[in-house]
Amino acid sequence: MRNGVLSESPAVRRTLIALAVGFLALFLVLPLLAVFSEALRRGFDLFIAAFAEPDTQAAIWLTLLVAAIAVPLNLLFGISAAWAVAKFEFPGKSLLVTLIDLPFSVSPVVSGLVFVLLFGAKGLLGPLVDDWDFKIIFAVPGIVLATIFVTFPFIAREVIPLMQEQGTAEEEAALTLGASGLRTFLTVTLPNVRWALLYGVLLCNARAMGEFGAVSVVSGHIRGLTNTMPLHVEILYNEYNFVAAFAVASLLAGLALVTLVAKSFLEGRYGDQLSRAHRH
Amino acid sequence: MSDAAHNDWAPRTTPRRTQWFLKPSALPGFGITFGFAVTYLSLIVLIPLAVLVARASELGLDGIWQVATTPRVLAALQVSFFISVAAALVNALFGTIVAWVLVHYEFPGKRLLDAAVDLPFALPTAVAGIALAALYATNGWIGALFAPWDIKIAFTPLGILVALIFIGLPFVVRTVQPVLQDLDREVEEASATLGATRTQTVVRVVLPALTPALLTGVALAFARAVGEYGSVIFIAGNMPFVSEIAPLLIVTKLEEFDYAGAAAIATVMLGISFVTLLAINALQAFSRRRFGHA
Image (cartoon, each protein chain N blue to C red):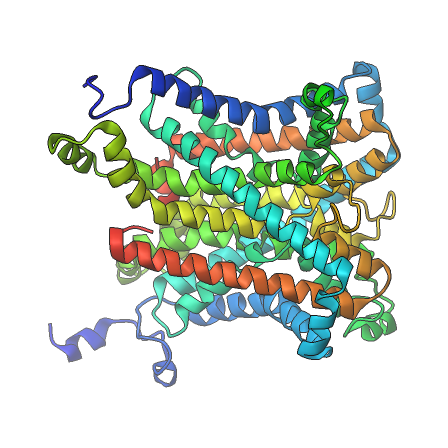
C-alpha cells in the first residue's frame, strides 16, 4: 500500500532513515572507530608494545581474576533466586524481585562509596578489618566486592522471568517419575534456561570487566597491584600516553564487540528460549 | 482425586511449620535457594546501602541539607540534573526516530544498526569517555568541524551532554521498539479508513499509545545519566561550578576523607534515583492498565 495513508511518503521515509543512521553513526559508530584509529595512530609496533608493559599485563590479569570471581558468584545467586522466586509462592516475592534490581539505579560511584564506608580506614568495620591485618579497600577484595555489587542483577533478571513463564509442571513430572531434586534440576530445569543463563553471563561479564566508577573509588589506583584495565586506561590517558591508553581501550572495545555479536546471535538463534524481553 | 489420596503420594518436602510463609509445593530446595539468595542480597546490596544511609543520617536532615546546598555541591547537582534532563530529551526525539526506522523500514545494514544500538551497554564507560573526548576535542574528527565557529564541545558542559546522550540512547530505543512492534496494525488501518491522513494517524493514534513506553525510556535514561561517571569525567573538563558533576564531587570528598560529606551527596543522589524509580513503576502500572503491556 503506497498511497500514503498507511505508510509515510518516500521522501519522509528517506529523511527518517537518514536521521537515524546519521545519529547512530555520529554517537555510536564514530567513537568506536576513534578507539581503534587512535590506538594505531603511531603504527602497529607501538600498539603491540603497549601490551608488553608489565603494568598493562598486571591490569589484564587482575581484570580477568575479578571477573572470574564475580561472574560465577552472581551466576549462583541468579540461579538460586530464580528457583526460589519462580517455583514457589511466598509473601514479599515482588519486593525481593524489586530489590534485586536496586544496584542498577545506584550511581557507580555510590556503589564504590558504600564499601569504603563499610571497610575503609574510617569505616564502620575498618578497625576490625585492620585488626585481622586484611586489606579490603585499596586492595583486590574491595574491587571484587564493588564489581559484584554493580553486576548483581544481570543474571538474575534474565533467568527469573523465564523460569516464571516455564512454571513447575515439568519438574513435578520428573519428581513423580522418581528423580531426585538435584537430578530434576540438572536434567530438566537447567537445559530449559541454559541460553538465558549464557545471555546473562555475557552481559554480567562485559560489565564486570569494564566497570570503572565503582572500582575506581575502592581501588586506590596502585599500578601493577590494584589497577584493572579500565583504571589503567585512565592512568595512561592522564599521563598523555595516548597510544597505550587507546591500545588497552581497544582490547576492551574488542570485548564489547564480541559481547554484542554473541548477544545478537543468541537473540536470533535462541530467541524463543530467552526471557520475553529479548524475543524479536 | 480426593485430598487424602493426593496427600498420600505427593512428596512431603515442606515441613508443616513453614506453611504460614510458603505455599505447599512438590518441589524441593526452597530453603537453601531462598536462604542463599536473601543472605547474598543482604550482604552485598542491602547492608552496604543501609550503612550509607546510616552514615548520612548522623548528619541529620539539616546536615544533609547543609552539605547539599553548599554552592559547589549545589552547582554540581544542578549540572548533573539539568544536563541529564537535556540528554534524555534529545534521546526521546532521536531514540523514537531510531526505533521507528528499525521497526517500520527495510534498508541495507539495518540488522547491524539494530545491534549497534546496544553498544553503550557493552562498551566500558572509560573507553567511551576517552573516545568521545578524542572525537569532540578541537583537533578531533567532529570537534574540528565546530572549531571554525568557535564552538567548543569537549571540556565544556556540551561535552557532558554528548557523553550522556551516548549513555542513554539504548534505554529509549529498547523500551520504545518492542511497543512499536506490538502495536496493532488494524488500529492504524481503522484510522485510515475513517479518513485520517498518515500524519493524523501517527500523531493521534500511534504516538499516544507510545507515550508511556517513551516516558519510561526517558526516565531510565535520565536515571542512568544522573549517576554516570566514567564516560563523563574524560570529556567534561571538570571545572567547579561549570562542568563538575555530582558523582565526581563524591570522589573528591572521599579523597579528602570527608566521609560524611560524601555520604550526604550520595544520599541526595539516591533520593533522586528513588523518585525516578517510583515514577517509572507508576508509569508501567498505568501502561499495563491502559494498554495491556508494560
